[in-house]
Image (tube, rainbow, N blue to C red; front, top):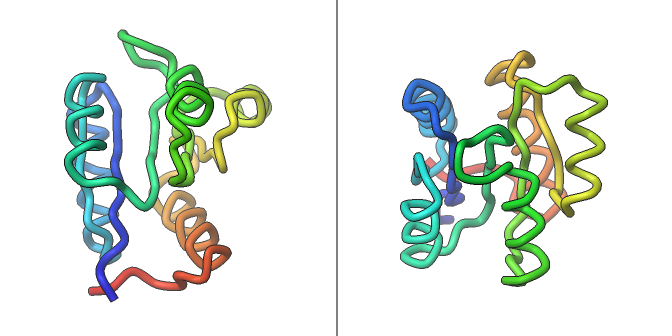
Length: 130
């Protein structure tokens, strides 16, 4: 089985690097973007199996991006919001935007990896290849 493809958008190069390293170590194929232009280019070039979106970015709030992807573009991939917002606010924004799930940055990479595994297991794709 091919590795699951994840597209990650965050305006912090450090967060992108740390998250990419953790996801690749877990066997995922990861593309990253620091801005909307790079994100859209990556999304068109190779459609992802899952999208991870930071909420607080300079160009757009991640929940607005998730909502646009779902409603205007009919994006089929699950969308996970990743943010340092408190859990209650993040859960509300995820529900309102049509995001599949959310993870707080404070919970760390283990929580993100667990959430991704849950999402892929629910879709019948239990493990990344690798």
